Length: 243
Length: 324
Image (cartoon, rainbow over all chains, first blue to last red; front, side):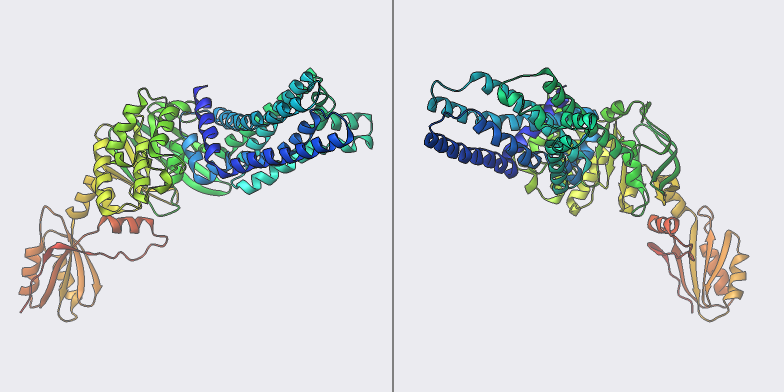
């Protein structure tokens, strides 16, 4: 446990001196702000009260597109710099490395998410009688669950590559696939269709968390995705030894 | 301390290490020599549990490499060939991080101690990215020493250092070797001769020589090989004359005016040979001790094609006698 925390802490600190992490945080907050402003102006013109969806909708898309840039270096860089050799010959277990890397990335993204609280606070002031607290809580819970899974996928992918750019695009590909995989479900039969819908990340967010509903099965889905990805990451480090 | 038997490592179809066995005793400093691609780094990576062996057995301090890999990592200090450093950390932060991963009690004191040992104290707060090659090398060594390892494995520890630093690091290794077992790889033969108690030469994944440095050196200078040059071309006649001189064990004609003979160090046949040759009416131009340096043994053992042995003069042992 100590090792996980040590690795996570170093990882977290690294994000704060890495320009890419700042660029990602800046991009998320800036784009979110622009969309937020546009939505507020639009809502005022149409005389309707905007809800939290004007924050959650764009935030989820931004996470899908930008988190691979946060996680791409996590293990790929250690591999390239040779520091992985240092970690793998220190008395640290393979899963502690993966878990530490994941935790560091997760905490960084958590910090960025914390900064997005600015928008609900502002929105709460603008609309009367304030925003729906239930949607706020469930929405953020969903986004945190999804972030855990996205970071885990990013770290696992990064462990498979010695090159950050390759890790970035591979992670992006996997995330987009998971985001749209449910789309052709209508065209498929009953069984195939529901399977694809189950695999689809958006199917576990928009119908539930996004609307203020918390379903255990969605939490299980994101947790399983996280564990599966971390497990693949651990195996990938082991395989690296055996290659 | 280190026990390796029948170690084999394959990278795909290529066999990097082909059935090597050796033992290293507690407190020994062993030099691992070999050309590039001989399998030095691979062997070291297996010893440090970075890579698993394809076959064979490796034990360090009584722990098996596959069953007790974490125990081995606790007692081994390792400095890889490309010194792994986080360039975004300061020297102190880096060592504190490594001390944390190694679960060192009172880490701060130990880190300060180690920094002193490798004389990097003045750069403790500097960023690693700004360090020179030599400093990085010393920091890598500091990292390997942090947990006072029983076994220290160093892959090319003096590469990239300036002469003064090389001497420093060599002294440091010798100092460490008094209490710890050290295995180091190097290209520099005099370094191995100076620092190590024992030398292992590896070529194409196989150990071609395993002997103590002391014995190697006596072997090298013990049996004297002497070159003899005469005027004229009756070398065969001279050779048969030399061969019959008591104490001479071997004669080899090199050129039409040059031959080499061997005699044991205990029974120095050189004066007798010189007298015999001169008395027989030859003009003796040169009589010189030649001996194989470690460098030549190394080249000899690691050469792809066996070539005719070439010997080098050893200055300081020359016996030059001018004939009439």
